[in-house]
Image (cartoon, rainbow, N blue to C red; front, top):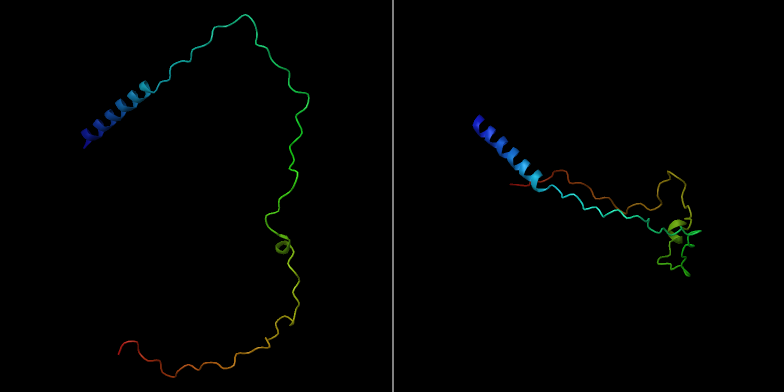
Amino acid sequence: MRLVFVGGLATLGIGLGTFLVLSKKPEPKTAPESDHLAEVSPPPACPPPPIVLADVIELADLDPLLDPPARTIVQTPFEEPSVLPASAIAAPERIPLAID
């Protein structure tokens, strides 16, 4: 077991070393230095004004969602509703078994 572990670590080390050697990037070539400096254009005095759309396009009417109409209150809180069920179903005295 120890031999397998040592062999695995050795293989890992060799693989990692190979990867690092092959993935090494070449040094970028530098341009020869010139005697004159590059011409630099002066920055603009002020940035251009932002572009504004001429018309606003409204895709959905959201006003009713933001300000819903007020509902009229018919009852006072905790008052029993005026509509009661017509009849309640009575539970049978004996519930039959599911399996006979």
